[in-house]
Amino acid sequence: MRLSLSINREFIVGAIDDRLYSSFLEHLGRAVYSGIFEPGHKTADAHGFRTDVAELVRDLNVPLVRYPGGNFVSNFRWEDAVGPVHDRPRRLDLAWRSVEPNIFGLSEFIRWSRLVGTSPMLAVNLGTRGLEAASALVEYCNHPGGSSWSDLRRQHGDADPYNIRIWCLGNEMDGPWQVGQKTADEYGRLALETAKAIKLFDPTLELVACGSSFPEMPTFPQWEATVLEHCYEKVDYLSLHQYQNNNADDLSSYLGASVRMDAFIKTVVSTCDYVAAKKRQKRPMMLSFDEWNVWFHTLKSDKNQEPWKVGPPLLEDVYTFEDALVVGLLLNVLIRHADRVKVACLAQLVNVIAPIMTREGGGCWKQTIYWPFWYASHFGRGTSLMPIVSTEGYDDPQSGLVPWLDASVVLSPEEDELYVFMVNRHSTETLTVTSRLVGFESWSVVEHVKLHHDDPKAANTEATPNRVLPQASQPKTPTSLDSLSFGPLSWNMVRLRKV
Image (cartoon, rainbow, N blue to C red; front, side, top):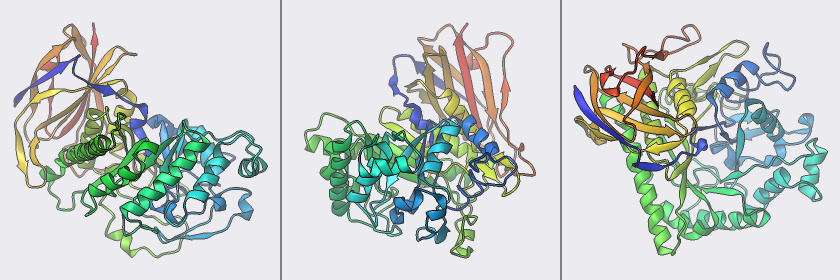
């Protein structure tokens, strides 16, 4: 099947914020305990951090990690997670019905962040707590000294402030599963007053207000409008959360998930712009898509878990090749919305719906979804260009028209290279393109990376960690985009350069 693809240097979406390739670490399941932190493991350092896992995290090049939740944060007392470890209390985590020993706490997270080369994005509890506790936490983390909370941090051994620059004002506050659920007006007022206090402390800090928990919520998108009518002037981002599933085992519909994600973002942008117009605001509200991924494999089995354990195996989805295709498609959507989506967090990072898996006391390996994220994180930085794709497609009851080819384009001024990320959704047809490159007329293909497997259900496991792997090829002579073919059900990255 032949189709056309036009890439014009002047069709600029916007600058891609590096934080588009961020991730998320929650005190949930084995994300922390036996995930990134396992004292006594053969690879553990002096602080108990698994260095084998740290190496894989560092390789993903995530600039920001959201912490400590998630649902966990809405019943979390941050004071329990600081100071001498032997003085920290054990608490019941009501969100995931687990026991939190607080052995890994705030200072440990900061130290681990520095080890893997990332920055923290901290969430405050606006469920069971509020303005006073949030203000105290910001002071503890960011004030140099000379005040009660900052001096307490210094007593705990950290003389220098953590200098955390971005903060989430709660998590999924419209969700009935949330400890401390709020109405839109209740949350909007609380977010406003908390944001005011934090901005009084430091007006340069960036704040994220909670959007609806997901687009199927009955509160969506009125929640967004009401919340922003309260706090638009004091926050910098509105959050979006969405997870994709293939519960129906319908691959065609599953591959349309990115169409639904695209519509979700457009609706939120429209809502933000409506409130901006209503409030006579010139500054556009930016978005933080701080939870996104595939999540469905363990939803039923997790219901049978025995409660009140430390680090129980929860949400340990084993990802397949078809899941990797969907993650690649979702990354394309984020790149195409780089003008408004400035932060995005793959949820999560280790063991819990994650690209990295570990065995307690054993090894670690890369899941299938690791690869499209790795390539986007390493090559998807620069300027997003809007590709014009002329292609046929198919109708899906959930998504409407789904095109066979999905693409995003990134121009890297630093490398003077062009990266085209493409997914062929067709299960039997190979796609070839008739390309029109405007402003890149003398550019040629220098590399073509493919991710494909004949079995859509193929997975990488500890026993078979390399079952689904990308394959890269470099042409020996200058090659045009038109000469390439994109096989059925494949994720592709094409790298072009002026030669």
